[in-house]
Length: 172
Image 1 (tube, helix red, strand yellow):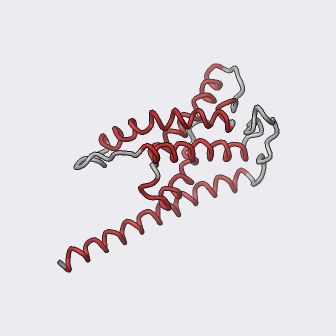
Image 2: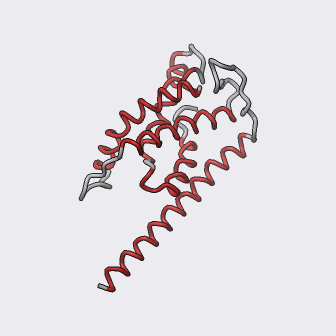
Image 3: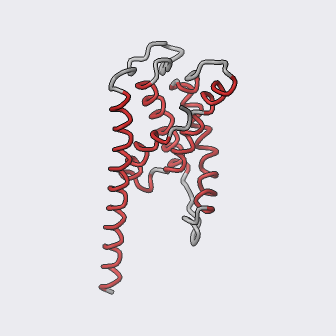
């Protein structure tokens, strides 16, 4: 199913670990971009469901597009959501590209495990060595649990940082 939110679980965990060196917004945008081709196939009824966009070559091209467009879309989105109301959040280009590449490559890997029609190494090879590596149920659980663990880690780190910040202000 296109635009599955389950792909966001690993992204949340990565955000918790990398903090400001990773943009969850750009990562999420890359997930959407990856599934435009399958959506078109579903709507038109023709084409290869997980075609070129779900190869590492296609993911590379889509990562570049996602980084270039996602940086600005994400900055605008953060402003609209009120997250960057006082001071605009600027996403560094390196962070945009890292986030987009992690997003598209992880998408290919996760869909390679789940879907039989994914050919991740096309055009070099049409085999999918990842298919069935773990069960679909285990894959979904891993994605969901990684998101939950990531959210807990993210908020714990930010809570500790706020405590440390308030102690520094209190001592002055």
